[in-house]
Image 1 (tube, rainbow over the protein chains, first blue to last red):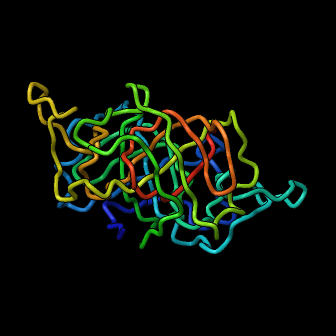
Image 2: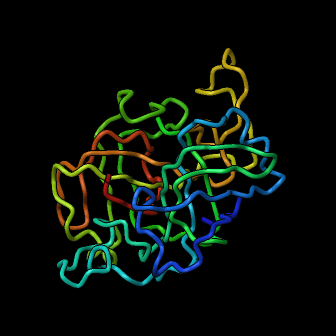
Length: 127
Length: 127
């Protein structure tokens, strides 16, 4: 079960600790820059579409099983599968975004809370 | 970017070719059987919750970039990122289910279109 990077995030966000925790919480626009060899897989996606972007949160810790939700010690500990914590056994991020524009291998989306350089591993339509 | 299996699907579905394509299309109840070492990560999930289950669709083909949606040759070819095709560079499945019961390492959910033995790689709450 080896993932390959299909795109990378290009964003003004560089610090995961201070980035918004979810897209709707003030996350900026960003670009997804796709590998040229997967461009045929984008056929049919158009500006205005809502898509799910799956990322690999490569700054996360994989041996964490319980967290204080939202990094707030006032919140009682919960299992990471009951939260959207980035720290989890498989640090997959799930982001619903709007496609603003597509220019060759670059796709402009918003809002996206993933930081600059984050690997993208899948894109799916919202059903 | 190496995934680890956190659970496996136990289902009456055994043939991906004839399984429903999406949960709401008549998929059955199923069990997720978790690895004992990740059980603390489930704390806070309760019957009645709606969760997202991420699977690794290990029967899928990873070199397919365009498909006839829903395996229907009457549908024009589209890029796999514009579809929910299991065949895609990283064959991650995304399934929204209801938790029916939790019994130790076994979680009863519905509906789930993944076939018996499919590896589960993540669980997240629906936001």
